[in-house]
Amino acid sequence: MELKRVKKKGLSINVLSKSSLKGRALEYLYLTNQNTYPIDRYPYMWVKNYINLARYSLLSESSYYKEINKFGDKFMYGVCFPLGYYKYLKQKKHVK
Image (tube, rainbow, N blue to C red):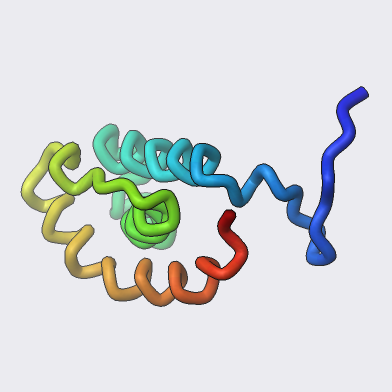
């Protein structure tokens, strides 16, 4: 049995560690590069990938901009970056 320390809001502490957040950033990078959620079928998830890529990159202090494959994806990352930064500001106080 695995015991985890849990915060008052219900998140386990290791979810907000730098290594865990770096993995989340890589997850959204792969989703973006592989076009897992095409805009014509999943417009909400398509935009959310760019926002979360920016947020988790900032939270983990990593940069994955150079690893984005297509120019259009880089452009969308730049357009969605302010929203990712806003989400980063709301969550950064919880990161260890």
